[in-house]
Length: 134
Image 1 (cartoon, rainbow, N blue to C red):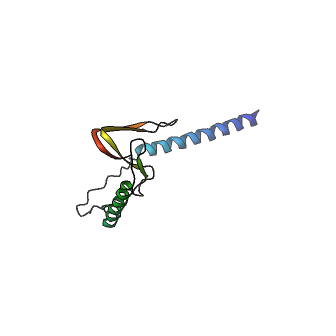
Image 2: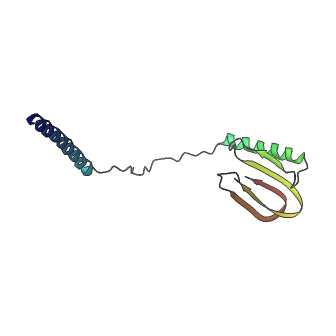
Image 3: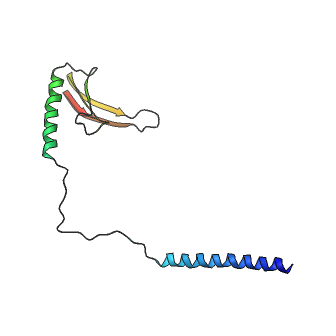
C-alpha cells in the first residue's frame, strides 16, 4: 500500500512539473512581441519594368502574321477565325475574329462545365468587323 501511494505521488508530481513548464512557456510566448515586416521606403530604389523592346517587336510581327492569316480566309459568325494563345503568353486565351453583314454586338460566356464559375463578357458597341480576346 505504501508503495502504491509513493508511485501515485511521484506520478502526480511529474504531471504537475510538466504543467508548470507549459505555464512558464506560455507566459514567455505572451511577453514576446509579434514581429511585423515593415521596411522603410528606399528613395534610391529603381522600379523594375517588364517592358521589353524585343518582346514588343515579336508581338508586332505576330499581329501582322495573324492579320495576314485572317485576311486569307472568309470568317463569319458561324465559322470564326480562332487563334489559341496568339502571343504564346497565355495558354488559356484565344483571339476570335469574324465579319458580319450588319453591325452586331458580342456576348461570350466561358466556364460552363461542372464546378466552373461562368464568366461572361459583352461588347455592346455594334460593329461589322468583330475582334476580341477571351
